[in-house]
Amino acid sequence: MTPFDIARSYIGTPEGPGPENNPVIMEMYASVGHDWVEHDTVAWCAAFVGHCLEKAGIRSTRQLTARSYLDWGVPVEIADAQPGDIGIIPRGRSSWQGHVFFIDRIEGAWVWGLGGNQSDAVNIKRYPVSKLLGVRRAGHIAPDVTLSVEAVQRRLKALGYHEVGSIDGIIGPRTRGAILAFRDDQYLPLLPVIDTALVEAFAQASPRKVAPERASGAPAESRIVTAANAQIGLGALGAAGSIGSQIAPALVEAEQARDMAARAFSLFGLEAWLTIALPWISAAVFLAIIHYALRSRAARIEDYRSGKTL
Image (tube, rainbow, N blue to C red; front, side, top):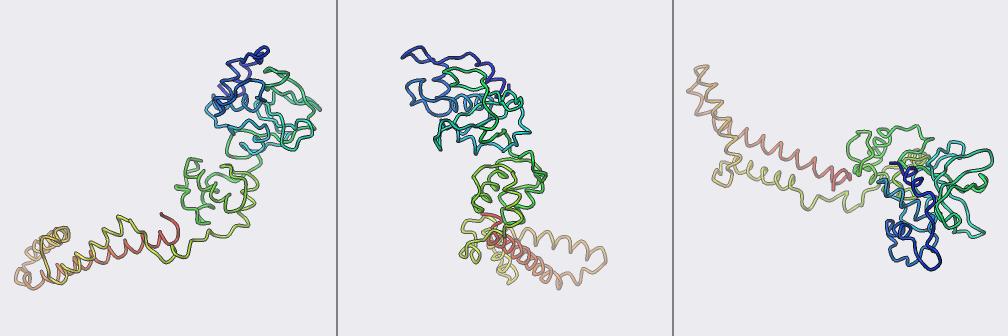
């Protein structure tokens, strides 16, 4: 069921009579993290909306203030509002109080809202469209954004937000984390959404800065660097002829190369040259080990210094 379907199932739910509480409404408070509320006379329009969202598996703002939904989801133009979108209007002359509801429909100058705490119950009530502070919709991509998720991921990676992960067109945990990191650096609202503000910030943003100590450092606990250092040491020992049990991994590769060389020399009738060539073949193998270990270590350190890896 959608949050809107769930909301409709509560139509007619009233507050408890007199000092009594309606346990259904008390559960709404608790479902958004406010089980401390002791009476259902505490404003519960945001608790109602949040409860319906959470019950549908969508994270709400988990706040009891209606205006908290002005920063939730993605913005929608009033002309594009659909049933089930969330509308927010002011309450009285307060700069922070408000009322939040699910939009049932918009007809002319009126918006019909399905909400809680409307005359102390869940029902559908009309409000002037002109009072709408905003309309929000669940999701990560604003309707007016034409940039694809893949394009956003590529741009984030190009700007140095490598935590975005694979360019797969999926807004998963890593992509959401990269979006939040970028928005934080650009002083945008911390929402994991792709909206016009994000797209406009892309056009102005400079590559992410890497801390000076990291730009000239090396990862402290990298298995790749540790293994590469070990291979370099083993290769150097082997190339110098200091062969022992401590360089067993390198010896295996050298032994395999020597066996292949022996078969090749035998095939062409060059056994006499084998004794002379084998030391050079072994040295070449050890030098190759050193070469590739150095490249592996350098690549890992460069990824660290550029911010690609932790």
